[in-house]
Length: 222
Image 1 (cartoon, rainbow, N blue to C red):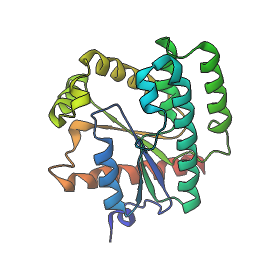
Image 2: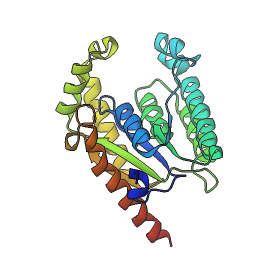
Image 3: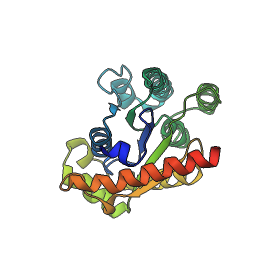
């Protein structure tokens, strides 16, 4: 019996992984997909026509960048459900408005008019009964010290050059966002409670919790 069947996770489930940089979203996405026999959905960065322009001029391109992300994530979400589910998704569509667009506005990189337009577009596309919300959002959390240590350990050049104050700000923004998030059920996992890199068997307790959580959510709806 495979783990998906063992813990009663429907084969058409859509599970989204969220959390700040360094918490291991990609590792969790791949680990759950392998264990459950699901497909993966990752953010497409290489084809983004606005990224270089954005980094050269935040104020001129932040609105364009966020609208592009919104459109691409919306199309990906639609495709996932057209496939019939069975996906683990790295990063959610909800983080764009709840964290990044809001941050651009508060830092003065996006005008109030553009921010209001973006929020209206997001609400019209996503925050409706017709949008296929995930069955579960898994939020990976840890202390800021744990997150910074992991960022340093993986040694990506751009991340190493980023001031620690930025990671501290993102950590606070993510915590504030998840505390008020209610678009779909949320399962919080502490990154110190498992080690998918060195102990692949640590995925099973996570899957057990997912199965229980989905079942309890289904019972509440029935």
